[in-house]
Length: 579
Image (cartoon, rainbow, N blue to C red; front, top):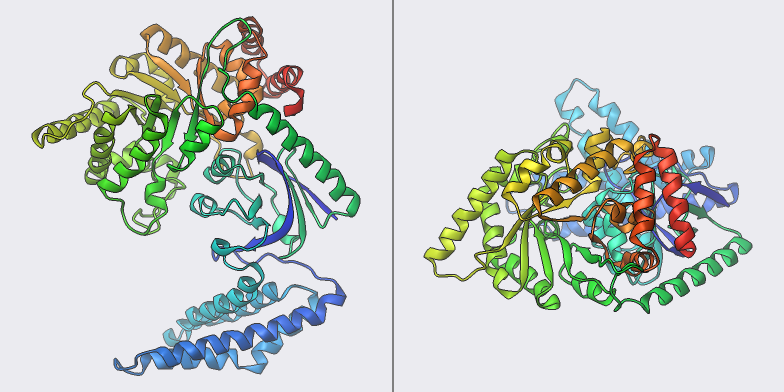
């Protein structure tokens, strides 16, 4: 039994077999085997070579060679390698001597050969390295593919184990079968983690080297409450976690009972609880959980889940479906936040050395006006169906805001010329996600109808910590005094300007921060839908005086560690079952 500690990013407990996803961008991790498993792994190597050769032969037969024999020659070279007994023996010898998995042995031997070819001065020989890498991928597909099946066509419950997951990979998981997620890399506010929370899948990240200890089919426990992953647990541990899981489910059922009740403090202060969504189908879940509308519709997934750019009608259909779920309740649609760790499958964005400080969000929109206007047209068209609001992400200065608003007005004029109806008094807001925006909030407030504080990026940019990097994940904390002082500044400036303010970052989904936010004057929270009942219960259990006292105490403290501990203890007293 192996116990690994990471960062809990999505609550809940799952117990299932491991499904390993190895990205082609990483070397297959070294995984040890028992001496008794030696012959089984050697047989897996032999089967992989045989099946890969058969597959390649079938592909060769299916080719049309009217263009010449070059393609045929390539297939012949690959097949010859796969039938080479000496190559296969190098792989099986490594399994035999070092007690490693078939995957690791294949990757190690093939990459050594490829590196040898790359060092040769003869261009023809050095270019053969690409052939070796291709053969490696084909063999690994045989070894990994059969064990884990296609992630999109699972037939049994699994825990996905990976070095790192992209947002699109996570968004594509089937919730019926993917019961847990565990990854070596990642942080609490990485987009893959945010999606896991939205999907309600227990997840733990920043486990550093978990992939070195897990093999496909191993029993794995993911404790998304405590940030623990257990590989091959004993019977006693399994029984213990099955009991934990039952208790967690019972808590969820109790909280569901209050979903239709308002989020009102004991002394009558009303708090609006909105949902964060990526897909139209999630709107129904927000409603079921007792949400009052949508506070953050992340529209970039219209781009990420397809190999073509969405049309204006694609945008309109997605937004209209969401608006119809909520009638006249607020729907805040954020314009596309592409770049950083979110790229389209067509790779339309050139790699950047520091993407989080590069061409992303509103910066990308302002340089890609055709795409931007297409989305704005769809949002304006759908605004006649309900209480729709537009929100621009990552505004860092007034110039960006005025440019975005100017383009919006251009689109409005185009719709007027075409006699297409839209809401002329649609609210326009911005996300406060950077220190520059927070420090100039009072000036920005003159030109917008509302602020939404994105605490994820605000924390990242304030503390200069990559929120998805497990090597510095312990330095990332919204409880840092610097972050809290900026947050207080934004809230105060919004109140002075008499504009609406919400918090849509992940702190809105965390029970320990709710009393602080209410004490600072926040009355609208936008959060992941599974957490709405829990946050509602906490709000209904406190008074505004309780919250004001918490905020006053926190603002007098100068240590992130002390603040985190104090907030957690304060929330635990109110809602102990959440911890």
